[in-house]
Structure formats: structure tokens, C-alpha cells
Image: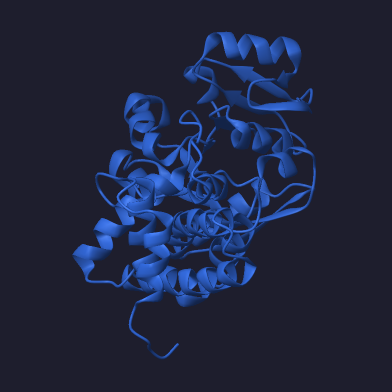
Amino acid sequence: MSVSVLGSGAFGTALAISLSGNGPVTLWTRNPDHAKAMQSDRENMKRLPGVPLPDGLSVTDSITDAAQNQTLLLAVPMQKLRSVLNEHCEFLAGKTVVACCKGIELNTGLGPIAVLREALPSAQPALLTGPSFADDIARGLPTALTLACNNAPLGKDLQQQLTTTNLRLYRTTDTIGAEQGGALKNVMAIACGAVIGAGLGDSARAALMTRGYAEMQRMAIACGAQPETLAGLSGFGDLTLTCSSNLSRNYRLGLSIGRGETFDPTITVEGAATARAAAAKADDMKIDMPITQTVTNLVSQRLTIADAVAQLLARPLKEE
């Protein structure tokens, strides 16, 4: 069965490349010039240079053409998800829509699945998340992801449809846990990047990852997630990857903060908005999330890295 990927960023393009091994794939971009360039060059020079587009992958700027398929992967930034759904609701209604973004909506505190349900109630929602870099997927390197879907039979069908020669999917019905893990690990990646950027060392990063994972669990479980979901690919797996690699945009933002450098404002960093949303939600729910709050203050420049370290180290001693 053919699928469409809506969103021609690096990750959307990589998914389309991998999925084209299973059959025809349509990659949608809203920019007509970008669509023409990719079709003629057979490469996404703008977002994923150096990786050829397979013959089975077609590029279009027509949402009507892209939405002909029943299964649609929506690879757009979390903070733009609702606007894309609202803009194209007539074409997406009744479809199986798989969100491929990670984060918490700033204005509502909702994750991708919740936004899908609210903005597009007639669709069948699912979430694809986990430890992955676009370049790895596009180049055929083995990658494992979590497919979260409340509808178990649909989840099984999607698992079969979206698994490829290099993309292995593990399914879960715990959409809340998958949402929270994918979102909050980006916040912790910013914190870990700041630690390394400030020269505080790998031991400090390991401590921060561990305490950050505890924060992720507190928030996720309070929202109704299953603890074991956070121990899987969408939680611990993604945390490990993004807190230790320069390929992570969230980690690189943290590095720039720790070094006192300016970060390119044109680069989408999901963890920055997610930190603000999660900190506000934690405050409303009376959940202790000191690292998340610290990242929020660092990103908004209300706190220096030196003050942040001092505050975290001055917290009361307690049992692990």
C-alpha cells in the first residue's frame, strides 16, 4: 500500500527514502520551487544533500495528490503541527495520520497524538518516535523506532506497512508514554549539551542524564504513561542518543549555551519550546522538575550556566 510523507525536511525525506523500498511513496512539500528542484535533481539539496531519491519516490507540492493515499506520515515541527492540520483538514479527514514529531505544544501542553485527536477527530492517529537521525535512516543504516497507536489492530497493520529493510518498528498502545519520552528527552539533551559546552565533564553529563530520566518518568507517569514505555526506545533510547551526539540539534543548542556562543535562530530546536511547555505543566501539576525549569531559564537567558550549576548542586540532599 502506498504512503505519503507530508513535510520535506531532513527527517521526512529520510523516511520517504526508506519507505520507498516497500513501494511507491509521495513526498509533499508546500514549496513549489522546492518540489521542482527535488524532482529534477533527485536529491533534497536543501535539507538532506548527498542522498539520492529512489525512483519510487515522487515529490509534489499538491496536497490533493499527496492525500490520495490512506496512510499519511506528518513530518512537521511540533509547534507547527496544529496549523498544518487546520490548513489541510479537508484532505486529511478520515485518513490514518502518523505524527513524526516530538514535543509539547506550547499553548496547550498537549503532545502530538492529543493534538491530532483535537484538531482532526475523524482521523486515525498514531505516533512514530524514538532514537533516530535523518542521515542514518536515509543512508540505510539500521534504526529502531517506536510506533504508538491506541488502536492495537491498526498499530499492527502500520507496523507491517512502515517497517523497512533498515527501519525496525516496535509497537505500543501507550501513546502518552511515547509522547512524553520523545518530548522530554529533547529538554535533557539541551541540558547535557550545556554541561559539555561549559567544560563540566562526562561525569556531570552522566549524572544529568540519570536525574533527567527520573524527571521524564515523574512527568510521564503523572500524565498516565506506563513506566516501561519510558525504559524503551521512545524514552531511554532516545535520551541516550540525543544527549551524546553533535548530530542532535537540541544538544548543539546546549553546547552553544555552555560555550556562550550564538546559535543559528533558523534551526528548529524542539526542546526549547518543549522546556517552556513542560515547566508550565509541571508547575500546574505540582511536579518537581528542576532540570526542565533550569533549561527553560537558560534558553530564555534568565540564568547563566554558572548560576544554573550552582542552583542544581545546592538542592537538598535526598534518597535516589
